[in-house]
Length: 411
Length: 149
Image 1 (tube, one colour):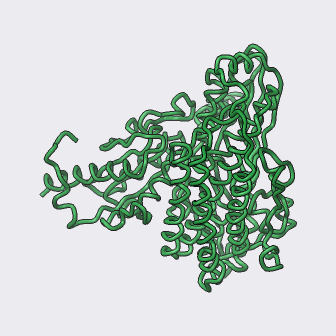
Image 2 (image 1 turned 60 degrees about the vertical axis):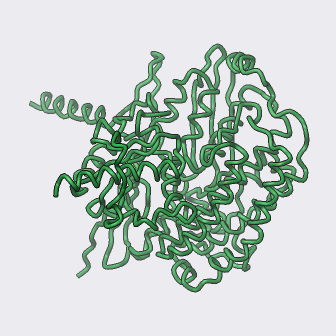
Image 3 (image 1 turned 180 degrees about the vertical axis):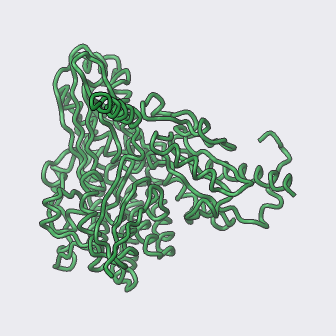
């Protein structure tokens, strides 16, 4: 008998941690159909941002698009505004931004590695990795004053300097990670348990990765050498010259499976350490902000007219912010975020098809999904200068009305 | 928690199992909750751990400002936790809407939907603050258990 069943996973499932629903059609243990349902944690961030008093206030909001990538979202937004308003960022600020972005990448990749180990039931490694991660959290706290949300980005620069003491601490921290990298590498890349569970699981071919526009480590693990830091350098990356890491750098072959995604992320931690060390050694001196006076900055933003796009390589992939400013209006006329998870959710389907139910958590986790980034807004602008948001209730009401109308007309 | 004498005196005879619900938070609080469980803070040594089902839990840990989609789910999770239970809200957005307060898609804050016992403010709160909140919830749970005996 060839009967298939549908298994719903989510909206809240202990293996996925964040609200998302997966509907899996299974025949025995094999997955024959996958459907993904998002938008459970939609908060309307773009709409809120467009209704805030001014763009500077929205930086605070951009940090809360995602608690994990809270450098890349504000950085991306700030870049877009700078392009729209033609603000030149001082060089030292660009270098500090780079350090912050790379510290975030280290923390995010270690976080991911821990979660991945947890998903395959290897909790010892999960705890070990998260213990290592606390060091970079301390460093971030020392530099910015906060463990998680860093509040360091500003339009036209950064808000805090890295002093000599701070530079020394960063150097020490980076030394710590270089020393411990060998151990992490041995655990993740040579341990037979992890290899068994992840080799040839959740394969995403290069063709599929290109077709479905996968980004970040997910795409790179499939052999697509795509990295915003390499292709469209921003901040100090142009000076350093980043090279996208694909798994063949490590062992000369590309499988596009979960194991390759582990390789890419771990090598990127090392790459981040190298970048931070280089940036610290080559840090130029100079001001931190293009415009120190907030009132003047506000006036300048109010006068600005135009649009800008910011692109940042977030730990999960390419993040894009689009901003449109109109002269005489302080808030954004338009703000659009395209977070990396948006691209990386569709590749779940080819990854999961043909696999086993037990592999769902690790395959889903292998793209490092971030639902809070993914779920944002649909705004319908009408020419009456009013904004309507279509909510589920409203749609339901519309649908009920239509049914009634059809029934009336039908008689 | 006005009772100053309250102490988790009997608490170590029963471990506290927690179910974590994300109702639209930005992940900031969620990673701090996990950080509280991992070796630096290590609340697991006191028997506090996250469980996979609300039916196994003593306490409900809620993060996020409650988006429209999550309202009925949150209610159902609350109903599934066996009595006596406590609800802890972690993060400013669950307490007041926080940075998302004016959003059209929020039904929260959390206490509009389910009764809340302990609030842990911060955006995100530090793991120390989360642990403090959990201890307060634990004391309340002990009182509730005492009443039922």
